[in-house]
Image (cartoon, rainbow, N blue to C red; front, side, top):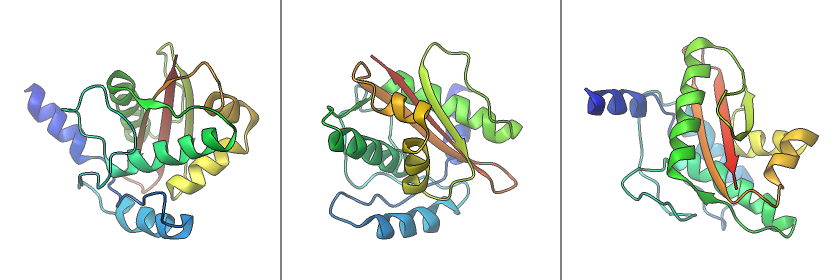
Length: 168
């Protein structure tokens, strides 16, 4: 039953072709648009952009894009890259799935720093919007944060929900 639940959750993820650091933001946005619209598909990441504590948990390409763009912002501001954390990844997926299913944008009750968003069409757009918001920017650029978990889910009405969670 647990495996079928995990499979069911994974099937609801939007997938994206990973755009590595050498690609432009525009080509990354095109990849986001192309693959986030494919409901119920999961695609393996092309490139591993950050260490993962539990290599048996697959990090999806949309998640790689969010983490890569977040770490690019941290690097631009002289900060170390965040490491993808298995427990935060699971928590972000669980919460983002809940937001998409209930079509409700609310912060989690978990004890984490969190950025959430709704409606952006690409990882570039959502990270840019977070960086343009003082509270969200503070979470991304917090020197104490060392770990991250992220997710993106599409609701049945087509709206995309986004989640980042951070811990020390």
